[in-house]
Image (tube, rainbow, N blue to C red):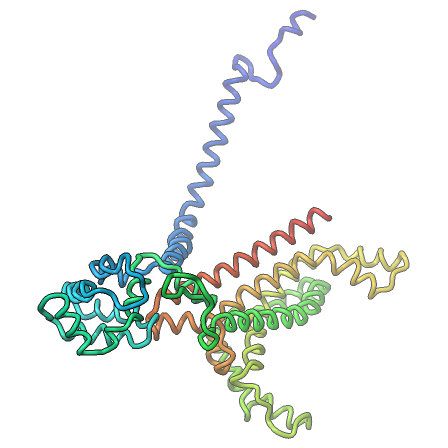
Amino acid sequence: MQATLASPPLSAPSGEAPGALRQALARAEARRKWRAFALTLPLLVFLLLTLLVPIVALLQRAVENPEVANALPATVRALDGWDRKEAPAANAYAALIADLGHLPDSSDAGALARRLNTDLPGARSLIMGAYRALPMEGNPDAIRAQLIEKDARWAEAPLWQAIAKNGARWTPDYLLASVDLQRDAQGQVERMPEEQRAFGGILLRTFHISLVVTVICLLLAYPLAWWLATLPARSANVLMILVLVPFWTSILVRVAAWIVLLQSEGLVNRGLMGLGVINEPLALLFNRTGVVIAMVHILLPFMILPLYSVMKSVPPTYLRAAVSLGSSPIAAFFRVYVPQTYPGVGAGALLVFILSIGYYVTPALLGGADDQMLSYYIARYTNVEINWGMACALGALLLTATLLLYGVYRRIGKAELSLG
């Protein structure tokens, strides 16, 4: 009996201490984790280079303001301490001419002029006129007189206020402008004049169109996903191929098809007139109606797939049990079946809404001037206005909206799990 009690523990192999066994298991587990990490490392590097780095660059460019600081360093120093009410002293004029003379190329002067022109219309002509008038010689008072003689606006404060306001390398101006705010000449944040407020309305329009598209997709996708979930596997697979057809077709091809269908002499209007539903063609193209129809067609599969995957996991016996206990089929459906599909509803709605707020091609081709969404103006500032700061600020606004929506979805999901 004593020999039995003194025998080594059963968990340790014969002749090996328990500590050595734990170390061997820990090393094996560490090797397994490193192998798993090595397998995922290429994907992590790919996401870092293609997703995180561009996002960081976008956020940086939204607050970067290098044009004035790089082109006019001496002018910015000369304006330090200026009260920004009257035109500055003559030494600021001399510093401006010296800075313009040190620019390596006319393209640098053009970039400076474009940046100041976004704050003060007409600043481009002033800067480029002064640049073309180089060289200017004489003392600061003589240079000041030459500039004022060339254009009387040099004697006014607005251009100098714009230079002083943009003298810092980093600025909140782009982000403020994306929500219809601005800094005044003294640097205080204020609302833009009413005639200049645009992006608040554009953002609300973007959310409104996205919400309408999401609701219509949900109303169309829910009964279809439920029907697919109740069919035999073979029939459901065949019909699911039809649902996935939009994934295999280019967006431009689908938009072109809708242009053919929705135009005044298109198949939709001809069919309705042939059935006697309407007497004259409906305006379905180049307006909000055409945009919503095309977006619903493109985004409908993104709502069906999450709903279908959740509905397939709901046992059909639940409905039969509710009916057998005295509930009507309709009440059983809405009180027993529908609550179990809320995760699919939330996932599909979030996916469709986030995709909708970033749409550009469909509203640009099928919508009118009052139907363009925020992405249209991002593309305009990128390709037409060449204002990367404003484009990145609007992109940051969309990114913030997406993250907020995802945060709300996660919070709602956690609340439902805790209640369950």
